[in-house]
Length: 136
Image (tube, rainbow, N blue to C red; front, side):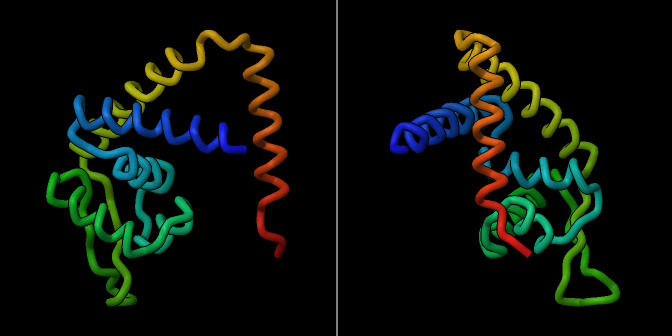
């Protein structure tokens, strides 16, 4: 199990470095943009649920991304405590560039592993995620 943690940490650290170098964003900020890419107009709380992180963490990253003009945060007219997020065209470009970079990096990292082994790993992780999913 420790090797799983080490692998994740090493991959995340590599992606963090590459993203910062190329796009000036962190991996966590990329994940926020991913959440917005998957759901064009959403709330901070929905992003936190999607990413399994605290709303405070999301709020901090959103403030930075808004400063960079990657997203717009507007107060929900129906609930003033809720903020609706929308990615800007600049944010969309940054997301697409970052996504392409991550795909390239992951291909380089995992390319030496035979496809059949990668499929087995994917199936095993899917089984674990299903088992860990909270029951209703």
